[in-house]
Image (cartoon, rainbow, N blue to C red):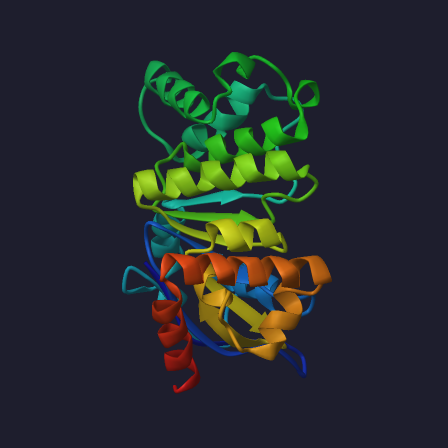
Length: 273
């Protein structure tokens, strides 16, 4: 579990994060969404410790990450997996060597044990046959899967993904979303994704934080979004006529399933807070 307690971050006179609090739970896909300049990227960098907050706390399983010494932070970082926007693979290394890199940096064990772990992770992302290939020899979607294998090779408790579907076609994006969701549930990982992809929001968003001008404007699940009355959120998520029609169709489906009362009560409860 990761908890943010009233975190603030600014640069000079410009305040980027204005007192953001939320809880990101294990076994859930936690999304940070918002338009450019909303603070979501700075928020993720503060969570992983690439930036220090000006005030407030970032807690990893009730441990105050913001107050830790560098040695203690290193222990937490060894429990973090990171999937970068551009995959960030080493061009001069094979797929197998790229996935083994964190094991060489932080892991223990014999070479045989490390290779077995790499093989296990590549098999999990269905890339075992590509182990000896170089990044230039595989597709964009395969590079993302290599990035995921590398991110999970140390059995992380926390997984951070920066725009995991950037540059991918819609079909491949869905496969990446499904894979991340499966791994999150399978290993009970606290997964945090920074995304603009509305398919990810609607299909994978167990918990969503919508950022607007440095503040948490709204939070809830992908099911809650369908009945949200927050105008800023609706303008962002359902910007096109097509998506507005899709929202209406989803509402009709939920009415037929009898789930609308529960979701409407949840949304009304948020408005009353």
